[in-house]
Length: 339
Image 1 (cartoon, rainbow, N blue to C red):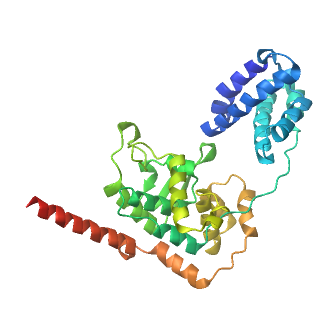
Image 2 (cartoon, rainbow, N blue to C red):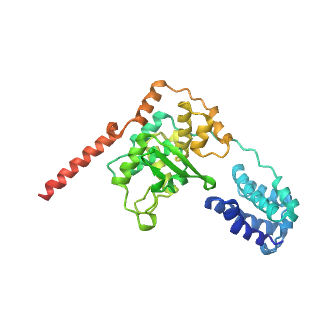
Image 3 (cartoon, one colour):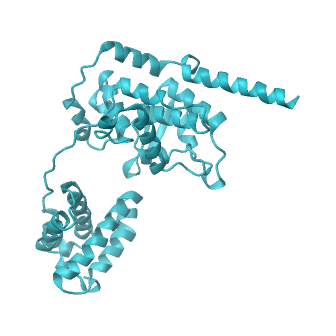
């Protein structure tokens, strides 16, 4: 059977409809085969259109993985991601073409390469407070960014999950938020009263009127379109750069640091691994257990101060009070100008 025909089924039917893979996964797998097919054709000294399933030997795939590391200077993590795409194709072959089971099993038996696990780049509670304080609420996008940072920390959501939040996912009465995560699975989480109030204030008073296509989205950018995950990354990086020293920034991912910080804060507060797993949307509790290896001995007065801050209402937030005072002053000036 031709490999090209198999790939058409893989991307056209198996991934989106049978497996229900996300668009991000499909694009990542597509990029893998855009690299793999030219390599395989050259390795076999044939044209790409002439490749068949019989050409998918373990020797070919190991040579491809070696080329990624040696020729393209890819890290072992990238190598493993490319191998995951090939193994996913092997699963489809085994499922849809049982007669080719032997080929699929050879690909599936290729082991992942061991990699060094990076340090978990989370923010300490005093650092989170510094990040919040770095937001200038008097800017046009100030309140939106302030609410966004609080939500990232409170929910532990990924950038892609926050970018795809709809207005009707947020229930202020129940203080809950529905999040569409990986594998198109929803999870319902509770959020802090302060975050609820900030989101309500943003929606009712500061949310830019979106273009018709994006009316359902929660966060809107200055172009009146949905705020993308890249936009969220830039916002986080901006305020982290303002609040933290350059050396500290090297150890953290601008957006994912909020996710790790949320998990660490839940451990501080005595939540179980299962509760943290459900809150973050981890498929495997093994992903959650990594936080158990952290040294979480922090000063009690810092924890107490932070808990009081997160549980406080907006009227007790000095930044919000300053914003409201500034806005009222502006309103009076506008009124005087109109006389």
